[in-house]
Structures are given as C-alpha cells and as structure tokens.
Image (cartoon, rainbow, N blue to C red):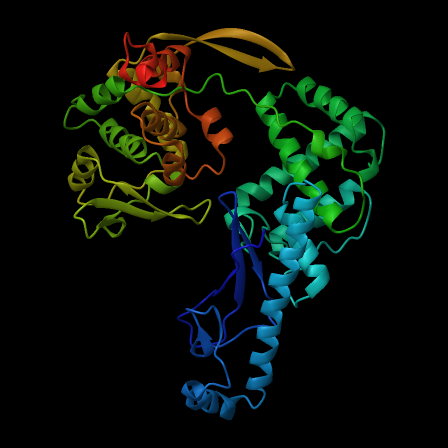
Length: 458
C-alpha cells in the first residue's frame, strides 16, 4: 500500500527560507516529519500544487531562478538536493510501511520517524537527551532538562516539533519524584531499563496506592513512564518491550455530565443584578455549548466568530492543547451570552472558576445526592456527595460532548470538535448510562412491531 505523500512549507508566506514538512494520513492520524534545516527553500521557489521546488529546467521559472541565483550562486544545487531528499523520504517511508504490512505489524509513527532519521540523517534543530545511559532515572532527569530547555520536542500526534507545556513537564517531574521515593523504599540507587517489567509494574503500583494516590494518578505516571521508555528504546539504549504491556489505570466515577433539561435549567436561572455568580454560570455555559476545554472557551472573543458562505455562523478557534483548528456551529444561547458581554467575556482563572461554579450549582439547586466510588490505596469505597460539589470546569466540556452524542451527532464529528484523538478515549470520556443506551437502541426499527425494514430483510 503506497502512502499518499504530501510535502508542504512550514511558513509559506515567509520572505526567508522555510523548512519543509513531509506528511501523510494513516487510519485518520497524521504523520509529520521535517526534512531538516539543510533542506530549506524560499517560498518563491516552491510549487505548492506539485508540492516540490520549482523545476529549474523550465523556461517559465528561468527569471525567478536567475534572480535568486544572484543572491545564492548554489541555488540550483540546493534545489536539486531538496528534490532528492523528497524522493528519498517518500521511498523509505513506503518501504517501512510495506514491511510492516507484510509482517502484519502496526504502523508506529515514532518508530517510522526514527527509521527515517537513520536512513536520511537530516540536520535537526532538536537534540536527543545528552545522557546515553541504560539507567532510567539518569535518562529521565536528562529528558526533563531537555524539555525545559526546548531541545527535546514533542514527536507524536499533532504536536510534532512543538515544545512541551509547563504542565506536561510538571507531570514528568512527578514521575521522577515518585520513582526516587519508590527506590528509596526499596533501598536501591537506580533502575535499569531492562528491569522495567511486569514485576516492577505491580510493585510500583502497590507503592503508589500505598501513598494514598488514586488509579488516575498511577495511570498518568505509567503513561509518562511508557513514553520515556519508548523514547529510550528509539535512542537504542535498550531492547526491552515489556513496558508495552503496562495498562494505564483510571477511575472517573466522580465525573458528571448534565442532561439537556439540566442545562436549560441552568441557562434560565435568573440571578439578582448584583450577584457576581452570574458570570461564572455564563462562562460555564460557553463550555457546554462548544464542548471545549476551559483553556479554549475562556478566551473566546469577537475574532473567533465567523460566518461561512452558507450563512452559518461558527466559532473558529485553534485548540491550545493540540494546535488543531476547529469550527463549531453557534447555538443561539451561545451568541446571546457573547453579546451580553459585548464579545469580551470576563477573564477568570481556572482555580476561581472551579471554586465558584460549585456555588452556582448549589444556588441553582443541583443538590441531589450522588453515590461515587473512590479508590484510595487500591481500596474501593462508596461515598455520598451533593451534585453541586462535583461541578468543575471539565463538567462543561463533558456535558457538551455527552449531549452532542445523545442527540445523534456522529462520533467522528464530535471528536473533531472536542479534540479527542481516539474513539475509545472519547467513549470513555462521555457519560452514557444503561438507560441511555437502551433508549437509543429501542429507536431502531428492529424493536418496532411489523417494521418495514425487517420485512425487506426477510
């Protein structure tokens, strides 16, 4: 299976030379790979339709080539080298994928990227960890330093080539801290990559639970541990693949989502004119109507609202976390709230929002008792809480996604709006109970008496 290879300039409107990115799609996921800083070209010399540098033999391009040659006598050689690099990258990528398909293996983007580096060896602006070691702690410390300095960049999904966010770096620092404490308890100075196996996984899990942490916390530690161990494997520091068997645990039983009637009740509640809680309610509703993260729906302004050629008004925004640009149809209630604040919603921190949205929910009357399962130290207990206590900024996004799903919007479309990368991740995120499933299935003609569709099947 030959890939549909595409090449594009990173900065097509730049007056200076731009880097070139190779990309293609596989199972709805995009692979991106930079051709390196030794293969940069001026946008004037790039044919965007053919996705390659201009043909230096063409009479049409003679004048512009001559103009650039005055500034750079080696421009023809440079263009020739870029053309060769493009062909090499496409050939090696096709070879890698063909071999994977032949062996019935999955296509791992990180491994393909490392394979291309080995075959092409382009000059990169990024670097690998300075420490070449088989000691996990030493490697992890070096990895975190590289993340902070910006010498180690994201190499997966839509974030390829971007620096790690401070919150992500903090999560890896938490992994390092937990590993250090774990090894102190075991009276060990370090742990080798070859020792990262299922026995270690179970032992580390008992330690983390013993500290009173939840499955969510342990799951995040394991997710980051797997990433670091995989990066070390791609750096050829070990060949141990036991980490691939590690499961990312989670426990989301205290997460809630409102139904349509509850959202309407929240929207219609009338606060007193001097009540400061109203703005928190309004911003929360923006999150519901857009199904976006707080980092996105809290920064909406007039620049995010556009009208398409069809006349449909949309919210257009680039997700802060993924960098993906999305367009979301504007619901009348959403527009009303934005007009209320003249498209300049109050700037509020997420911490303040989490504190006050609980007060909003309590005032509106979301006080019913909810039983939730809690995991502490690996033990499960049932506790009761009032519904308003479970409101967070995340409740808005989860509610929006869940309602979109319940009203019949296709899963793939909701994922494009919300930024979820896999259907499994999305279905685990929304709140759909057995009753919701039964009602949705019951609407199928199969469950209707004397269904015309069934007669045709018979």
